[in-house]
Image (cartoon, rainbow, N blue to C red; front, side):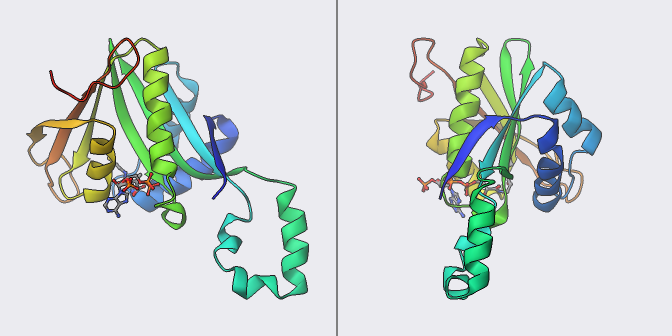
Length: 187
Ligand SMILES: CC(C)(COP(=O)(O)OP(=O)(O)OC[C@H]1O[C@@H](n2cnc3c(N)ncnc32)[C@H](O)[C@@H]1OP(=O)(O)O)[C@@H](O)C(=O)NCCC(=O)NCCS
């Protein structure tokens, strides 16, 4: 599946807001999401997919119709504009806090979350932030697996951190090697 990662701008706010609401029981407000795009403390990245990405999943349904041809031509002109995922990093003194990472449920397991995480790590490095931290629900197996894939390790639990169901949060850290590679947390 084709997609690209870039810095979010104000035109992406609606797409980010939609995914935020779809993914999280306690979503950020639109105002806060706006701030994450416009305030220099944050780096917000979006994954942009093709307008026809969802249709591709049902090619057998669409391909044999004239309609498919029309839609295919019309949509390929406006390629890679749909927000299919996003990630938010916040600078907190000399640390980077990953505040949010989410992928549209129709586009999961295609490597979008990984690409966003790699780009967030790169952005942290560019900003001179070599310690990254985040909180994740203890039950969120896919997200924990993704974070571990990039070298994050758990360093404790915040009890009843999430107000909707009083679920605990796992606190995870990643320490980057200033010379380039991610430190696999042997410190
Ligand atoms: C977590 C999330 C961002 C992953 O996005 P994604 O685009 O599906 O991730 P990727 O395809 O890049 O997968 C990356 C890794 O995540 C892990 N992973 C993803 N989905 C998984 C699943 N359903 N079960 C177990 N591990 C999973 C795997 O380790 C995978 O690596 P692999 O493909 O090498 O095995 C996505 O599931 C999501 O948006 N969830 C809802 C929002 C959320 O909970 N965000 C985290 C908040 S802290």
